Length: 496
Image: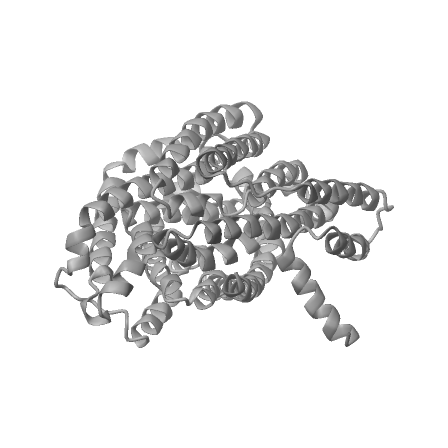
């Protein structure tokens, strides 16, 4: 777990830097200078691009995660044909996506012309975004397998956001028009793709062997079977998580404006994913290796410690978010009204997701990966109609209600499977004590009188919360990893 801890900490720091840039973009620049409608457009383009990019990979990404250890163990780097085969699959998938989009063009125009005409005007820019996102996902999977997760996280989380800041600067100074801004936005991932490609080539292990290897011959059927099932699972999961954007744009009371409010709420809640993203990027190859070696004690340990660590960090981040969301609402203004309750319900859903740890990764890298597909199918069957009907009746809040219900049911299914199949149960009385303690702390800090200046108010509430939160977590001993980190910095400060 030491490797996971050190890499996770570095990845978390990298991701946090990215989120600082993102927060400046989403909470300061975009609402003031782009406006709600244009901001909503960027969200629809990015969500559509990411969804189609996942579709275009046709299951090649989970195949890389799962089977790369076999290629590494049984083949020399010159004979590894996995990059060549998966690259061809991605290119073919992108061609199919483009053809399907061209055939569905009339349908898209009919659905969005009334409430989101701006999207109809720029819909073709989804495809360059999709292409470079697909390329990055493919390269990233190899970067994780080569233990370069910190670099790939930096390229994913920091560079596109810096690029967005530059675009905003050009737009604000009138050096580019709306057309130029949206066009360049669709190429957000071109630099990360170029940099990561040359870094991987520089390792000497990322080669394009066109000769079919013995490993591919022996494991080919298993890889296809695994890839298609996990691809279906991941795509359905992503579709369930992004469909609210498309439904809001088409059926929301304010179209792209509601989408913009949902975008900012989602961004705030996404801050809670920082520990999850960093731990996932390091944990996937280690879990794949542990399943290959049938090392159940290591898998169980990873599961337990992932729950402990993500619970502590998730509770801390959710509490800070909720204690200060009123300051954000007053800063954004009336165009983003209603964001407080959206953040609350979405935040509770994300917190529940974090508190279930690496359950999805454990199932997805095991021989029971078909369960991953099944739970995602059930999740999608629940989420899609929920989104449609709740957004139709409750508008923006309907998306928040649907997200909370779906994510709780989804994770409950996975928790129960791991418990009944493998006897893995990562929770203790300390877990309950942690949740109750933090809930009490939030209630106490919430009673602090609001200050006229939102910056002063935010600093006071956050400082008071942390003043009690860190000692409470340390003495409850919820997470060995978090306690070790606190002790490390205490020694540096006190010298003891």
